[in-house]
Image 1 (cartoon, rainbow, N blue to C red):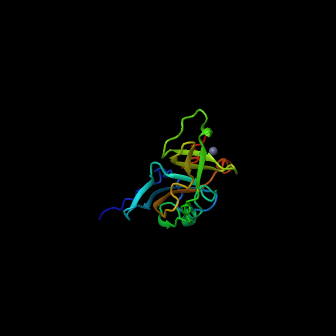
Image 2 (image 1 turned 120 degrees about the horizontal axis):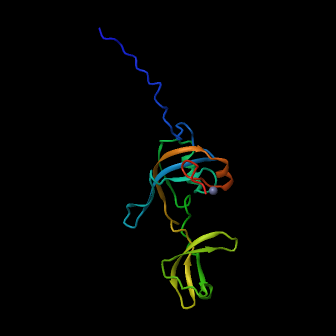
Image 3 (image 1 turned 60 degrees about the vertical axis):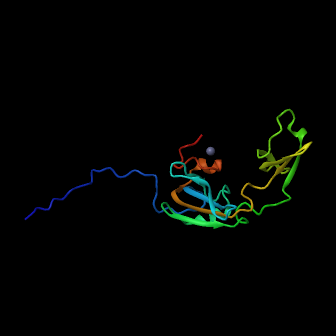
Length: 188
Ligand SMILES: [Zn+2]
């Protein structure tokens, strides 16, 4: 008869991980996730336009207004390891395309700087101090015409990805209003 040998594993080190299994996504928590973002192309098929990978995840404080509100709504209550997939209408994403949202910038505005070329993205500020990006659509004799729509305006967004980590935001992150990396130590 064989003798039952009891093995003890008690001397093995406990696995060290900052990943907490059951923490759910909620405000004031830092979320790290992967995503693939697809939009409809002119040929009717979906094309991949942006990704965040396991190696370079997207990390943000949930509920701090950094993300599209509807994007966050779809992630509410998920936890580490959960896959997700959802679609946002253009209206719930970056808005419908607005034909009126074109600004004419007098060339004098650029002073001695070079006049930008068609397709260039210009960092701009509106009268209320809001920052926005404008894309140069044409150059007139005395003005530069800039499209103020978000580059993804008018597009439905299809997101697919996985939640990599959820943890409470630390005080420094909360006071800065942004996450300091997946582990909270990539501060500055
Ligand atoms: Zn900071």
